[in-house]
Image (cartoon, rainbow, N blue to C red; front, top):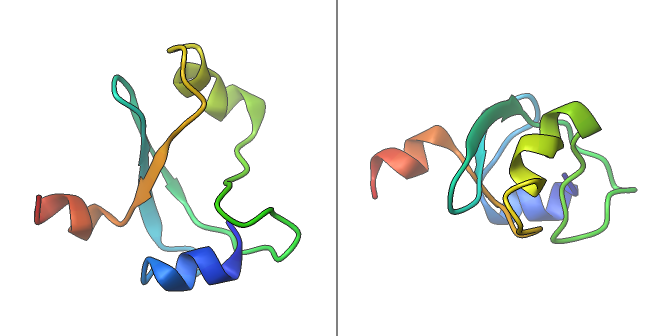
Length: 70
């Protein structure tokens, strides 16, 4: 994840996050990298595959504590 996107979401390096679309949710820890395009996340194919096979390329990245407040 781009560091500025992480900062906008109050997410720290190595913090656990929840990545989800309308049907699937996975957990991961954040690695910050300025080479990742802003507003995008990079996931290894074996991790991203369950999310992308659901017919959407849009995902949400949240801190687990943010989900608790929903």
